[in-house]
Image (cartoon, rainbow, N blue to C red; front, side, top):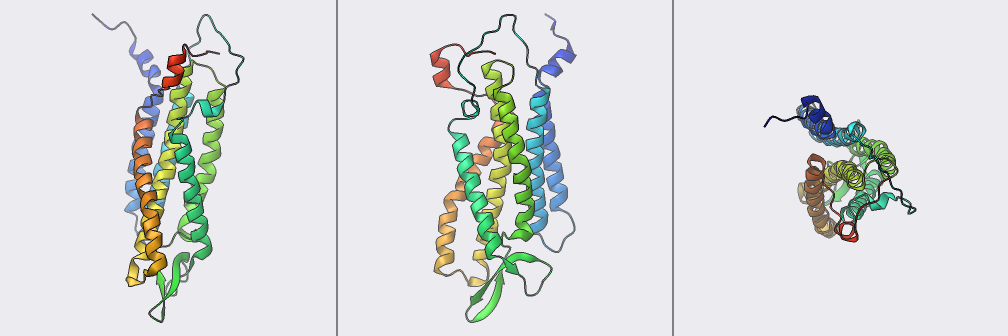
Length: 264
């Protein structure tokens, strides 16, 4: 039996998926080119690559949401209960991503205030940590000071309010409850990709810097031990976010058990 649905209609039905997948692919290609850019500092291209990948993921989720079809039913019902953003986002992962973002901002702020200029490279202000090791002044790096964290702060400052706006738009927009949840999960996953990838990069930078030149010390050792759970959390949320962006399908068992979703 031939498929009666036109090809154009099938493409439009999945335009949001194609947008997210395409932007993820663009982000991967852009990250590869940025990593391979000519630079005497291998860390800065990595920062640009991670940032570009995360922003492409966010852009793809926003574009996919804009292209998603929202069919209107012949009979529409409305609920007196107000729609809230927290009811659309993943109930367990959203708080975890917010907690992770809080750790990320804290580490970046601490890195910005503790970073110094490299004695050998004064043009890289805020890229190392100057310490005294065995009676000698030395620089540990790469350190997440403003030299490296500037692009990360900029990406978070741009992506976070845009994603919040998109989630509010989805919560108060058209479509059935399942559609709104799927779209909200995709946006949340894209923002989670940006945050978790930056967390992994910052943890890696701190680990490399604190284990450099055998100047770890008790404080450095304690810092690395404290960073290990954050690194594991970053790997878990990165995997979840990537799967969610590729194929979002929100499942709310409690809402499903209570009955039919309310449509606007």
